[in-house]
Image 1 (cartoon, rainbow over the protein chains, first blue to last red):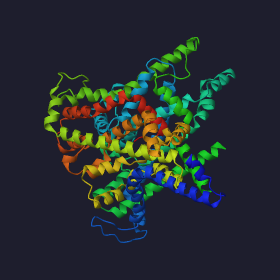
Image 2 (image 1 turned 90 degrees about the vertical axis):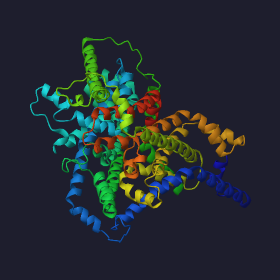
Image 3 (image 1 turned 135 degrees about the vertical axis):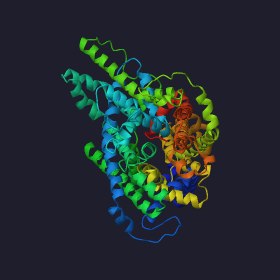
Image 4 (image 1 turned 120 degrees about the vertical axis):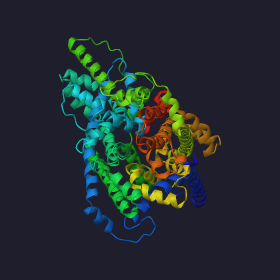
Length: 310
Length: 320
């Protein structure tokens, strides 16, 4: 009750107003007391580091903790750094493969599991399983599955008649596609759940009406299902993009950026410069670039979504 | 005026950043095991339809093979002898079942220490995340006060900020606090995420406001309302948050990699990774036994709490 009267304060006579502003203060204090235990942790461990990041990026902060302001020097150095450029290109290459592939596979899986088939409940569970499996287990198992000489995958490819199967993680051309395959395998169950939820909201009547009008399955998919999935599709794309830009742990344990620099991604560049070479200032500049890439692409997607909603 | 604007902005951000509510509701039904809307509809199976069904089953089987083969292979390999893992052509079943692998991994590695550390971290992190998360969520969902919406906007905004971009300043800060290379660093890192606040707030907002209003008229304080009304009503969301946080902490690799240099502090993920890279001639059969041991608790937790996993993902659209 109190909360409502408190916010309506304004034209009331002075004594009541004083009581109200007191109430308001009390409410504010109670509200903050609820949030504070979490906010102290969140603020100190997330917000403060983000602020420090923007300071560090303009310094030559190194392992001795000595930091001189160097202006844009880190950023100009980044521009000329071949490894950094490679990491940006690789991150984008990964994203361009991973995002559409994951959408197609998880949407396909969701469409399939949206049917009344035997064993569907089991598959819904099974599809989710890779997602909750640890990255180390995934990396070790897939590394061996992909092994050019002993791996079941290449043995299978030879079996179906492919003479020179790819070297996967040992080949600069195929290492990234292999990582994409594994990450898609890992993520598809998660996005499948989101799509499945979206599919359940598509009104059945729309499908019936389209069928009456003589639309075939494909036409019904493109004209009824896809438009109804719009909100879900937007959400999935945003999350997928951010998650692709920050890809790190899978690459770290599967390829460690190699062979050569063929799977070096931005997060790993930051990690190497920061934690292996102790060039904290320089690494922070790269982190600022990653930060803005994620923010900007999210904003673009929001604007795009809004425009489409009109 | 500005407060209203802030609130609108926060609402819009939140609604864009979460799966649509209609979808969430239908997912609940899915999670309960009831198949919504598709009843026995008595449609006749025409030949075309029958073929379509057969094709769908084939697709399903191919998916299942692709999905589960790595797991099957991992478990089967954990019973092989060291050389047999790499036999060409591949033998799927072990020639003799080497149960010894499961004993050797305990004696040849620090498995017990790793599991103890991981369990400690997972339990403490989960406890703190659920406690502070649900507490703060009450403030966001039920209290009205100055600064609330801008604060929540900050929480939501960090979803688009990858941890990798601020891990360095965070590390330097925690090193200055002298907590790096202790288990506390991981607890601090994981326990106060925006995620828990987010998930719980979404759930609290589905609980009718009248309940807390009635309690307020009865003279209950806000803290009592949280503890005696909201908490008992939000058991499903608490379960989701507990499971997701526990699994995320158990599986975390990057945090421990950066913060835990001392082998006595290693978690199971770091330990097993170290097992791969330290010994040049890794015994892979042994390693697979270790991996299987590390995956099994999560698999059991997942199977028992499957419903809550799905719900948690549906309400928040995020992972822990």
